[in-house]
Image (cartoon, rainbow, N blue to C red; front, side):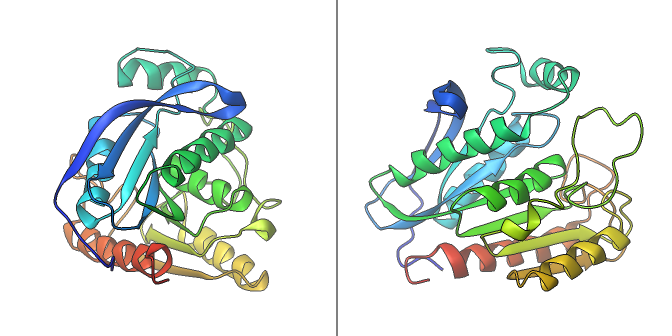
Length: 253
């Protein structure tokens, strides 16, 4: 846990420097005291830069972390609604890997530039953003990462999949941050077999990681607005996320 906690925080839309120095929209949550604390880059899911993901960013503020959520679709439809921007992003094949890495790098710079930063940062993502969290941790100086049921970290992308993504086999040897993975045992992408494969590869590469699979849970079990929601799994998952970031992002870590 963090050394000092406060319930005073500021959430607002800001502009940050992303890939290639582009100015992009982002949602910032800052804890309003001077105690040094870590920061979390919250990556939004395929439906886009929406209120649900902003709630997650605010929750990290409640836990005592600064947080930033970059709008990964900003270039696809500047100023558009989250639904329209997500549609434009999907039509363009999703977020290119190089652009994702650049936008997360800019998000890290933003967090580390805050007066109360302790210099430690992590990423978290759900669904497609879970894969992006792993990708970022393979290319950027992060202190921790969380992957919540990210598809196609390993395994093959099915024909007709709407996003232009590929598995991260070539990236995984470069994973530089401890990785927490939370998965549904009833999920198809990633399937239990794919989770086992990823676990084996990371073990082979000597990477610090911890995986948990939840029986009776499928894809998107964290999504409270969907039938897939599994509250008991979410309760345990959030406890593990809090412990993971507390271990690796706190000032004493």
